[in-house]
Amino acid sequence: MTSKVYIAIRVPADPARAFEAFTRDIASWWQPDPLFQITPEGDGELRFEPGPDGRLVTRLGSGKLFEIGRILAWEPGKRLVFVWRQASFSPQQSTEVEVLFEPVGEETRVSIEHRAWDTIPQEHAARHGFPEHVTLQRAADWWRASLWTLRSQFSG
Amino acid sequence: MSRHLKMLRQSGLVEEGRDEFDSRVRIYRLKAEAMDELKAWLTETDALWARQLASFKAHLQKAGK
Image (tube, rainbow over all chains, first blue to last red):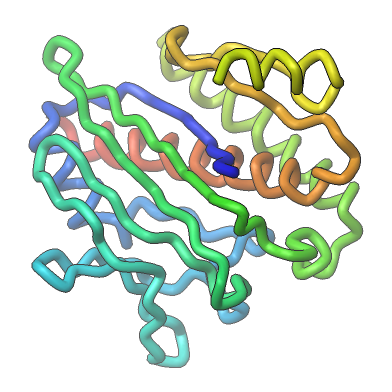
């Protein structure tokens, strides 16, 4: 079974520049959060390493390098696909993120599809050390706040 | 495929919705209690990328055209 999350946003840059900023500057725009940590040590400093054996990694505060996942497609200005595995995932669990960059006039529509198979993290909420309803409440608060931000940006 | 989804809908296992940004996309949300964990993952992942994309956009706005 496949489950997926889909979200899109319009950004003020052409696809080539949006792709470049998305990949090259990820350490600058990535927002770490204590609730959705990539590793127990936090999110660290993310970096895309392009190339045939390309991967997305993060440098943790301890200096350790954590591999989030292999890059499966690297098409500058168009498309980016990579594996997404948080430290808490079991070896069988894996998810995949596809980012599309589509021109809309002089701007770019950036969409993200995050796919998971039968691999939903076990006791995902409990792992954060919060009762599930608290986690969901927090997530819902965020979602509302994020939508509010998006809406104000679109109407501006 | 759509027949299967219809069955799931009728059985109350999923509910149908439209994607906020792309009307071509239909989103099926699981309703079964057994799927709480999946729902938690979907909610968290949704929130994660909403936040990251908003931040990415702000980054580009700051950088200017």
